[in-house]
Length: 485
Ligand code: ADP
Image (cartoon, rainbow, N blue to C red; front, side):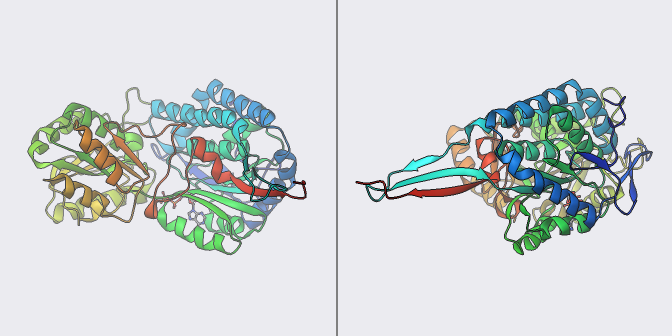
């Protein structure tokens, strides 16, 4: 994939063409593991965004009028190209994001699974016929594409967060303008490149990389041609985009921050819980919005569970993503490292106990040592904020009611996890946790068949699953009258 001219593209992709930014600016993309320059990428501004929106608008009617089978074939081909080029896509992703190669490859295949899923769902945009209030009328419902969609995606899953948006949008018959995160624009451009090879028509999918998200975000949210915005990122930026989208009354999907509780009851399979915690906590060095953030452990099993976790954490290999067996790569940038340091230091000052780690790692400037903090209290910053780093914060509890109340005591509501072998408790906890997703005795929540999304300040809308198409469809009611008795 990297041997043709545009195989590792660095320009914007607008209307099926690779373009420099109108003002000629570029920005540097840096490998967080080494600090090396990977590429200089077109730095789009409003003018580029407007031309991408116009390209998407120009392609909208044609794309909406393709058959589901035609869209399905293209999405399926795109998926096959992901799989064929998985190693190259993973290498690029590893370099711009820092995650270990095996994880990067897993993300590429996970991204491909959304293209596959929505290639199948494209055929299932059914309508409805509703019994009419009078014999000479018929009430029909059809579902139609929303129109031009904007996607704004984060750096922690540069491939999959975009794949799952574009797959759903295109399956529904929408066109899209995507703005990837400034730290990781290369995966998005590589995805566009493969899309063109798969037969996505010019203008249907456009990518405008930028180091100036405010400019591009403002142009996307301000345009009346853009009918929907799908965002994955922080609650703070989501709030801003919602305000901006209000001007033109856009449909919105928001996948925002979380503060996931991970509850371990004294009747749990503690080994399974410890394994589940490792998976949920340390993926992408702790930088995912569904990472376990507050680990609630019932007092009677705290010591045993802590030992199991400590044993596992001490075996984690911190290294550059291309080192064999690497588990934990660098954090994304210097700000991310400073945030983790601030949270750990302030927790320790307030009485948390450092069990292991608690410092930067010798592997490089942006690496942080996997850390366990015991005796964390719910009011500490580390329990209130999303840590976004490889830090386990353990909080003790006594009763089920206390665990549920502490877990729900947050403005966020994305993912939650609970480990118990009591069937009644499993149901109670599943129903009482105020979260969009609850993993019971399993922490691998996310897959293409399941609805991903949050409640409260973690956002709105669902991605993946059969519900994922709804966000890209409008319901239209047709009344057929004058039919006779
Ligand atoms: P994080 O804190 O995880 O980096 P952000 O919410 O800042 O999350 O970033 C997620 C995405 O939002 C990125 O693509 C980023 O460029 C974009 N973004 C940040 N600020 C704005 C803004 N003012 N308008 C539009 N997009 C923005």
